[in-house]
Every structure is written in C-alpha cells, then in structure tokens.
Image 1 (cartoon, rainbow, N blue to C red):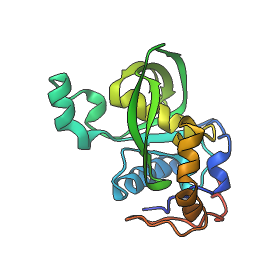
Image 2: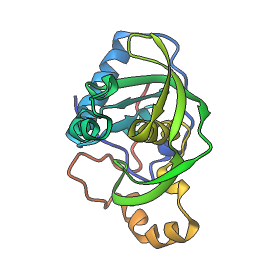
Image 3: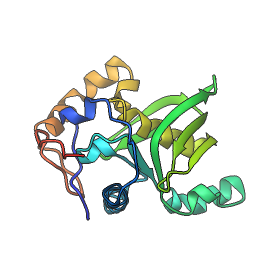
Image 4: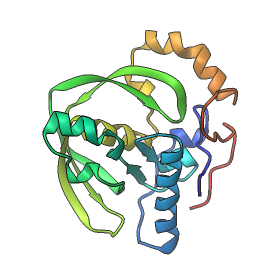
Length: 197
C-alpha cells in the first residue's frame, strides 16, 4: 500500500525512534508498504518517521542507479540489486574524511543542498529476516544510510547545512510546514497524527 509521506514541520520527524524487538507479519507488511511508497515517490531511501511511524527502520533501494554504479565500480554490487531493510541500524565506525554531495529528501520536496558526510561508514543492522549484518559502506550507499539513519534520531539533512543557507530556505520550508508544499507523490498534512506501531 502506498502511504502518505509526512512533510517538514511534522512533529514526528523530530522524534527519536523506538527499537524493534521482534519480527511479525505487521512488520513485514510495513517494510513492503515502505518500499512501495518509496518507489511511488521515486526515492532511494525512506525512514519510518517519514510515514508517521516510530519504529527504528528504514529501507533503501539503489537499483535505479545500477548503470551508474556499473560505470563507477565495474560491477553491480549485491546491495544495488534489490530493496534492503535496515532494522535497528547503528553506525559503529566512520571515516574521518568527509565529502560533499547534494542531498534531497522526500519530506522536504524540491529542496536540495550540499551536505558534508563521511564517505565510508561501518553499520550494524538486522535485515528483514532478522539476520544481523555488519558492513562497511562507501559512496552513495554510505550517504543514503547516514541520511536515513539521521531520520531515526529526529535529524533532517537541512540540519547539516549552514545557518545562512537555512535562513535563505526559510520561506520555502515554512510553505512546506504549512501544508502548501507541492510534490508528485502523496503528502500527509504536517499536523497529521503519527501512525500506531
């Protein structure tokens, strides 16, 4: 089922999420719905708070970038072939060096900004089968993981840009927060209640 995406200004986007304790049919359905919602919005990542949920969960699908990854890496990595679920993820190590890359967010439509983040991170998480993984991610996968993991802690990509840039974006952000933002996908009202877990 395609779910509405909660826009900037929605209180749940600033809340800390709750760890997932156990697998369930409801969790599997939630993961499927998140992947379907992400695809419908042409996104490559989606975190639970963005659909009004408090679970510590996000999904990533980089398969749309397979050709670019093939050119860059000489192969299509396994993580770029199908959607991935990250349950209770945590970054356990990150590179000291950072790189800048333009980011956007489905909860902040039509705004993109350069964000500096570590280019490589080590992340520990459970997949949708509750199998534990400990991987080192670089490049676009590292960036998407960091962006989505931020959502699980109430942090948005605009929190990583300068105060001057945020000030310049204030009018556009306020428009989104009033529920007047425009997107090619379904947006919830900024004052919509969070969904029950």
